[in-house]
Amino acid sequence: MSYFALWADKDDIGQTTDRVASLLYDNNISETGLAHTPAGISEDVAVIIKNVPKTSIKQIQSLVVYNRTTTAVTTNRAIGLAIELNNIDTDPNLDNILSSTNIITTAEDVYRFDFPAIDTMEAVFLIRVVSPKLRVMSLL
Image 1 (cartoon, rainbow, N blue to C red):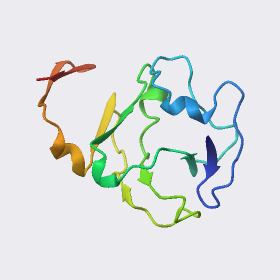
Image 2: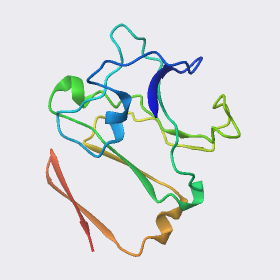
Image 3: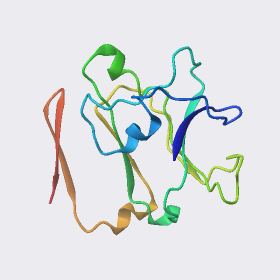
Image 4: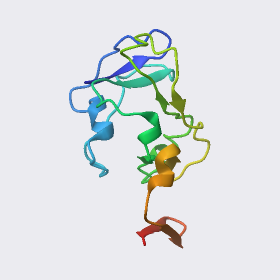
């Protein structure tokens, strides 16, 4: 279950029928299936995702955010975004942040946030810039 909420009170602010919050993490990075807050909502919006399988922060390798960059509007959409991880079972008001990412300050195609378990990866990543718009990541 996920929903859009104003961060100050964390109350559900509703969703549009075809742009629900769960589309943010459904593994579809095409231009179809975009999630969007209802019209007229302030910028102080959060997406709260519940019923995530319990995982120790120490076991997370990375979180990756893919940004759709087809227009100037979509390119800049991720600026100001940060990810916070909380335990809703012990902290129902989401006041105690267990871990967080830095705030995104630049427009990029992909953002990767490494966590403590990144050291457990056995492979090496090679990232090369093919063009200003295309980066290739290879698993060696």
